[in-house]
Amino acid sequence: MIPFEYLKPQSLDEAISLLASHGEQARYIAGGTDVLVKVKERKLNPQYLISLRRIPDLAYIRRDPEGVLRLGALTTHRMLEQSPLIGRHYPAIRDAMENIGSVQIRNVATIGGNICNAVPSADGVIPLLILGAHLSLVGPKGKRSLPLKSFFLGPGQTLIEPGEILTEFFIPPLLPASGSAYFKHTRREAMELPLLGVGLYLALAEDRQTCVKARIGLGVAAPTPIRALLAEEFLRGKEINVANLAEAGKIAAQETKVRDSIRGQAWYRREMVEVLIRRVGLKIMERIKSS
Ligand SMILES: Cc1cc2nc3c(=O)[nH]c(=O)nc-3n(C[C@H](O)[C@H](O)[C@H](O)COP(=O)(O)OP(=O)(O)OC[C@H]3O[C@@H](n4cnc5c(N)ncnc54)[C@H](O)[C@@H]3O)c2cc1C
Image 1: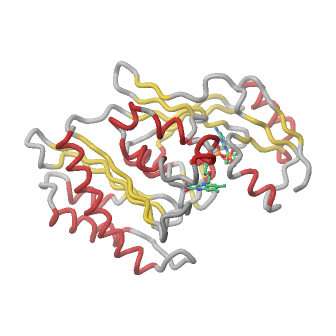
Image 2 (image 1 turned 45 degrees about the vertical axis):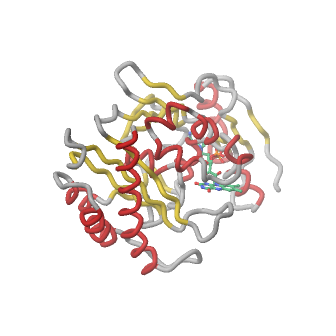
Image 3 (image 1 turned 120 degrees about the horizontal axis):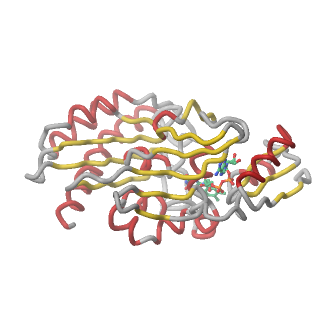
């Protein structure tokens, strides 16, 4: 590993000015579970790692009186996994968190790092995508917010500008009679990145059967995480049952840009999109019924 200096700013302003003064030689680090692996493998050779961990108030899970959920970017996967608020109202997030790496990884790895790393297999992305999350960023040019759905440009590429720090995710209020779930499809039960990640958010009408809103998120189904917009449109106004979920799965499979990879073949991923959308949809119906 090439030696580097580890800097510990105490505020966002200090972190931003440190990065500005060291330029390309510097990199932000949160939990370090992605960055340090790359440094060790010499895929990344920063002279300075600027830690975000000492900056106050970047790790929290809060819900406003208006029902907006706010997650600090430095919130760890373990904090999310163990939060009763997340477990009760945003179960897709818990589904994803409890299957990331090991407990040791989840204790340090952050939700902000998972999103900024921008790999198609990131488990944290899909639940936030289906819940309609937005991001708050602060950088040399000031503050801005943008929807997560437009954040990713390609593998490892995002709209984040040089020096910007992701500070928060905010999720709009949930609709009544709504529920969510995420399923990480892997080849084996051990610590592994997903072969496919499928998440759904469904909101039902008063009859608790007709879909008023559907969001379908797919990971490892394209170069970036995607929403299956045509399948979502198909479900709107329809009864959520096995037949309609199966049809939505077929439509969603056509919306993917899956490819063959070491973890699985494209045809298999496409078929599993169909299977898993049905399965995840039925799980949400059970969750809504029992809530
Ligand atoms: C053994 C192992 C198993 C793993 N298993 C999984 C898995 O099952 N699923 C999965 O999705 N991931 C997995 N990962 C990957 C990794 O743990 C996650 O992507 C993690 O969420 C990264 O968070 P971090 O805080 O460690 O990021 P870091 O490594 O600190 O940072 C990642 C990138 O984001 C940037 N960054 C971090 N925070 C910010 C911020 N607030 N603002 C701006 N830029 C920022 C950094 O500069 C860096 O480029 C695994 C990793 C390991 C080592």
